[in-house]
Image 1 (cartoon, rainbow, N blue to C red):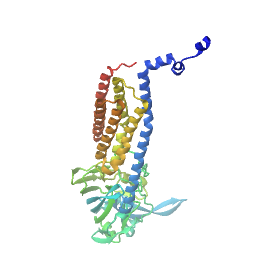
Image 2 (image 1 turned 30 degrees about the horizontal axis):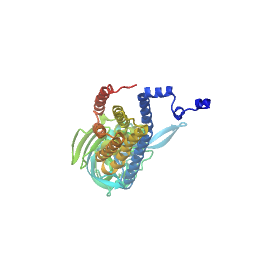
Image 3 (image 1 turned 90 degrees about the vertical axis):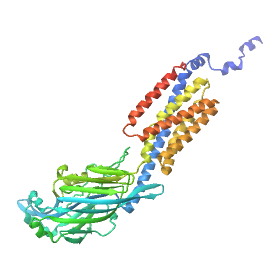
Image 4 (image 1 turned 180 degrees about the vertical axis):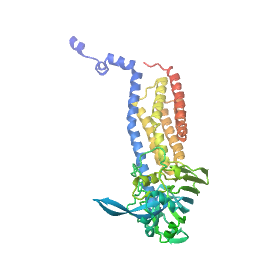
Length: 483
């Protein structure tokens, strides 16, 4: 009977943790909690990655909506020319025989003046909108036929009776009214297309239409289809006498044009001057040349460019089949983009980059409160706080598409801070620390918002801010005994 009592163990002896393991857990409880917090932070990168993917998906959806609007209204317009296309006969030696080959020269204007004025409006497709415009444009100037002497082609080989004036235009759907070209004092109706044999369209190598993800808007023109892929032409029957006399050929081409997103010009003239004005208050000047003068107000802008033949890499006479020279023409385009004041998707992408910082600082605050209060917080509660911080970015994205980024950021930050504050209050039963936690979150969201509004000084401000925050953490950490 006595032996049976000795072999019977109390219930607590086999349910409890071995003494060695219990002492190890107690001795290193703070370190273990820090490791768990680190693991939770890494796990939260998964939903953050899903939010980033959602932002990219919504940006692509918006891009598709803008493309659909542009396909019906008129795409970004790039004006190339006008150019005087002159066929000629060249003899080629093959098997000791001379064989005539038909080719074409493009004579660029000696003087090209472009004046334009655009009225921009917004068109919507669901919650997405695109900037579209109507522009009245006048192209004028002169052709100097004496430039043809530099080509080395004998004048008798030039087929003046088949010469045409051609004007490259990105999207012919944007033409509002019939186009009449006044050439050499005569008014001629333009026809659609550019019927020039072996004409290189002018696609720049590497510009295949693919638009990569970028944090800043792309200010280069869309020349993925080439500058001479579409356009207008008029056949000339009266320039032979003028050309043989060496007199300049004047031209004047008025255009009533629709387009979207941007407007660009190829500096075809030996001297090219461009004056352009609009009622759009947030222009972005791009391409190969910036305006010499510009004035931008909330009610619109005006800009002037001047480009000489010495500023570009192609001459006044270009072979129509010379892909290199016409590609150089394409890459020399300049103009303006009608960008939105705030791109909410770009701002959303930038804000997500600060997510890990916010999560770590919030976890650190909860961790210090836990140690000061001596009330252990379950790792699951840390996870719930982290998920609330991740949900902030989904709220920000969805609201910014409807209300704009700034308003959405304010509402989403207040909602998230209130949620975490109430959760900490109920968790720690401390009103003081809950309000302190909410204030910290408001400060962090405000600090990130300031960084998002900056461009040039965001890195400097962020680095200084992080230095101050780290100094504060180091100061308060000395009051906590880490074992």
